[in-house]
Structures are given as structure tokens and as C-alpha cells.
Length: 124
Image 1 (cartoon, rainbow, N blue to C red):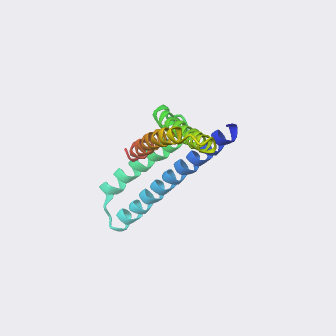
Image 2 (spheres, one colour):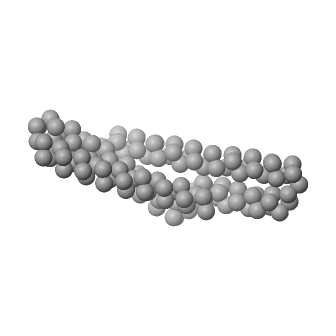
Image 3 (cartoon, one colour):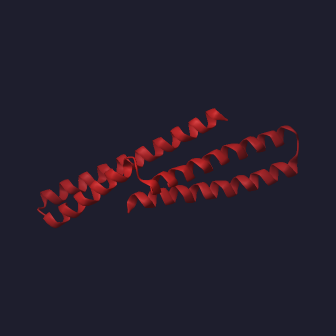
């Protein structure tokens, strides 16, 4: 169980880091283009957005921490549900397998929603 939690956290951290890096890089490119085209107002607003994003991607944002924790929680639940399915299959319990598969689909749906919430928060 401890390995699953660690792996889920690493996966979440990697996802989060990649999203932040991609968004930061995108903003930097937009700033460069705006500077080349002498759009000073746009440069200012993009720099402000970049500062906010860099702050969000850093530590100390409670809402961000909550969203990351929510994703990690659903990743853990997903792994547990998969384990339950495997156990039910090993015991030959077809009804239990179906129930656990339904449960897994619901958890995966919640996981996707949590990931979208995290990404949407970073885009603000």
C-alpha cells in the first residue's frame, strides 16, 4: 500500500510539474512574440499572468494543495479498486467483479474531474 501511495504521489507530482512547465513555457513564448510585435499592454498582462502562475506552481497555495490531494486520493482509490477486481477474479466471484468494475468506473470519472479541476485552477 505504501508503494502505491508513493507511486501515485510521484505520478501526480510529475503531472503537476509538466503542466506547470508547459504553461510557463507557453506564456514565455507569448511574451516574446508580444515584445517582438511591440504590444506593450499585452506584454504587461502576460508577465502578470506568468508571475501568478509561477506563484501557483510554487508552494504555499492551499487551494492548489487541496486539488493535488484530491487527485492523489482518487488515484489511490483507483489502484485499490483494481486490486479488488483482481482479487474477485481470482476467487471466481463474477458478481463481485462486475460490482467492482462499476465502482472503478465511478472512481475513474471522479479522478478525471479532479484532474480537470486542477488544470482549470492553474489556468486562472
